[in-house]
Length: 113
Image 1 (cartoon, rainbow, N blue to C red):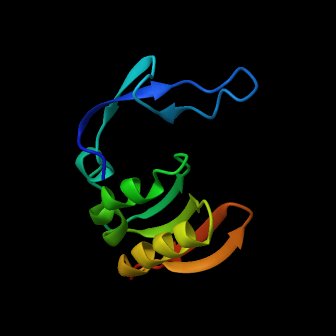
Image 2 (image 1 turned 120 degrees about the horizontal axis):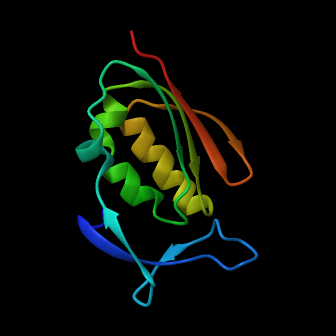
């Protein structure tokens, strides 16, 4: 998990402004906070999309309480088989069931009673 504080963000190219990334030579400073520290949601149905250009494992590490305490749907981008296996293992530990894989996206669901 990234330490809380700030990170340096490098904006995406003009062709793909939706593809910023973290780096030492970034031009924008952004806050780094865990979802668990920002959201206190329990026993609800949530829908979450995690697409953070390779930092999905770090996001999941900071969202354990959120994911363990809620059900719903999650779409998580993965980059390769090893990354997909790691994501699936983490989500399984949070009791989310893998339901589908489409291109780079893994889909999970969890029913709460």
